[in-house]
Image 1 (tube, rainbow over the protein chains, first blue to last red):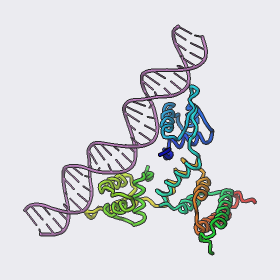
Image 2: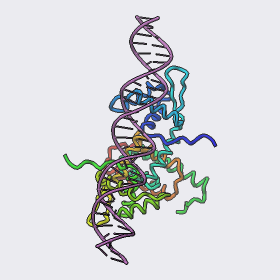
Image 3: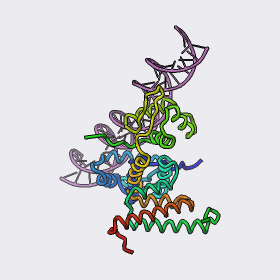
Image 4: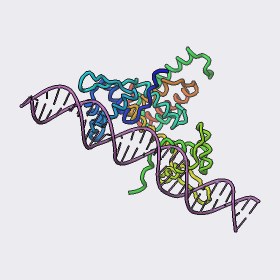
Length: 141
Length: 141
DNA sequence: AAGATGTTACGAAAGCCTTCGTAGTTGCAA
DNA sequence: TTGCAACTACGAAGGCTTTCGTAACATCTT
């Protein structure tokens, strides 16, 4: 008996969320301009409006309708949402194995030395965390 | 002027491809059994059949209809298909940054020491490749 | 030969997502 | 005040995906 979990956004909804995450709260007009720029063609204004209205019902965005031009802002966090989508994707495409996904992402794609270094740093952090807070994992060898 | 590229499989199609990749060529009956087992509930036999017929039209599978029970097999490779889906997903969800995806996958998820080691090995391989075949990348520091 | 069983082909329904047209409203300008 | 421009709300169409029912056909058994 409480707030329903925020649902998985669709493609168009995710595109809008990306705009909101990147630029902060915005009017339909502003969002629509960003979308039109990001794509090849113009996006119908009412299309963007409609999707935002659906997103409002789903709880993906909030809006401030004090002014005539309503201002929308993301109601879900970027990392959480990405994590949710990632889970589904890993399940459907890689049988739930995050390792396979990472291997594929790094393997079949050119990765710069910079990025590799960042990943190395992350690996170190994770291993430190594993061995300090979780000494019984499987750290032999 | 030639063969159209194989289209992006839908969720149900991907599920079937996973069965075919894992078990090799199979009849509709066998595929349907696998799907029913993998899910909670029974999958309608004709549902599986229908999807396979659509996949055949799209070029995602081939079939041998020499026998009365046709035998289907994947017509697209696992790695290629996963790579295709991964590209779309990275674009839509992480703005095209494979690095962000990897960080998220490794960060918000417990990863075993085994897996970390495998990733380290892959990183080494990649760096070796980068520095041998591409000495001018950006390897200062 | 006849019937039961299993298989393919096909049509269609239901649901979801995206898109857009239209109507109604509000605010501003002349 | 009248008219124009911008905005919201809403309905509906179109497309795609998934699901299933039904019909037609082949195969095997008795």
